[in-house]
Length: 490
Image 1 (tube, rainbow, N blue to C red):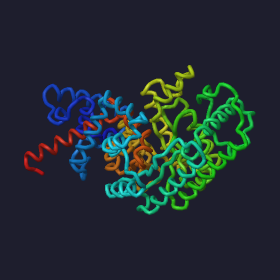
Image 2 (image 1 turned 135 degrees about the horizontal axis):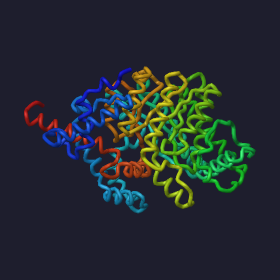
Image 3 (image 1 turned 90 degrees about the horizontal axis):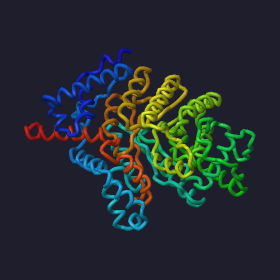
Image 4 (image 1 turned 135 degrees about the vertical axis):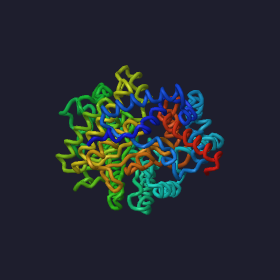
C-alpha cells in the first residue's frame, strides 16, 4: 500500500511547525525565514515518514481536531499543561504533595483538587467517572475506569479495594455497551510486602529452575534470561503457611473480579508497576488470563512496559505461551511510569537499571512491540491496547493497522488509549481517523490519588515534556479562534 504518497504536504508542514516553533503565533502566521525553516523541517519529516512507510494523522487542521471542544476548556487545559512545564514549580508542588503535613491538610487537598486533580482525574466517585465516560462516548471515545488505589498493606485493605473494583465493574456494566473498560492494580489486591517476596522467589526460580514453589498454579512465563534477575542476589526464604494463604486469597480476589468482567463482557486491564513487584503482578495477571481468555475472548489484559530492557523478550515468550495454552493474548502496551523509582533502586543496589539506556531505545522497543502485536491482532490471536502519548508511535501504529486492515471502531482487537488530561490532540486525531480510542479515568478521594498525581506532574515536567505537542496545538487553535472572533466569523 502506497501510504506515504497520500500524505498531504500541509499536514507535514504543520507537524514540523509544532517541533520548530515555540509560539503558536509563529506557527499560525509563519512567514519569511520562519516559513523557510518550517518547509525545511517538513521536508525532513516527509523523508522520515516515507522511509518508514507511515501515514501522518491529521493534526494540521486544529479547527476540525478540536471541533466540539469549548474554548474555556482549551484555555484551562493549556494553563495547566503550561504550569506543569515549569520545572521548578513542579518540583515545589511534588515536594508538597509528598509531605504528609501538606498533603494531609485541608488546604493542601483543596489546592490539589483545584489544579492537577481536576485536570487528570474524573472525580471522587464511580458515578462521577461514569459521567465522564458518557461525555467521552458522545464525542466518539470510550473510558477506562480506574479506581485509584494502590499499595495495600494488609488483607482487610485488599478486601476493601476489591469491593471498590467490583463496584467499578458494576458501574461500567450500566454504561453504553463498548464504552467502558476497567483498570486495576494487583498491589491493591495483595499486600505489597508479599508481592515483593513472591517476586523474589519467581526471579530465583528463573535462575534456578529446580526451585519448587508449591503455591504456583501455572507456569506461564513472567521472566526471561534478559530480565533483571540480579535484583534477587541471594536465595530468598520460602513463603510461610500464612503467607501462602494470603497469596491464595489475593488470587481469589482477582478471580472474583475477572468473573464479574466476564459476566458483563467488560475488558479488565491490569496495570504494570515497579520492578520489585512486577514478576508477581504478571503471575497473577496470567492466572486471570488463563481462567477467562479462552476461546479467543479478550477479558484480562496484562501490561508490557517498553522502557524495560527485557520487554521484547518477555512479549515473545508470552505470545508463544498463549498460543500453546490456546488463550487470547490480551495486552496493554505502555512505555512505563516508574523511571525515577527504578533508577533510585538500581543506584541503591549498585546494579544496572532495568530501563533502556536512552529514550530512543525505549521508542524503538515500543514501536517494535506494537508492530509485533498488531500482526497477531490481524491473525485473531491477540487483542491490544496501545497506550501512548508519543505522536510518532501513534502515527506508525495507525499506519500499520490500516495496512493490515484492522482498527475499525467496532474492532475489539485494537484500541488506543491516553491518560485523561494528556495527549488530547493525539486522541482526537486517532478518533478522527476511525480508531477506537479510550481515555484513562482515575477517580477517588484526593488523598488517595496523590501518588498518581505526582507521577503525572513528573511526566509533564519541563518544556520538552510529553505535553509540548499538545500545548502547541492548543495555542494554535486558540489563536485561530481569537482571530476568527475578531473578524466576526464566530
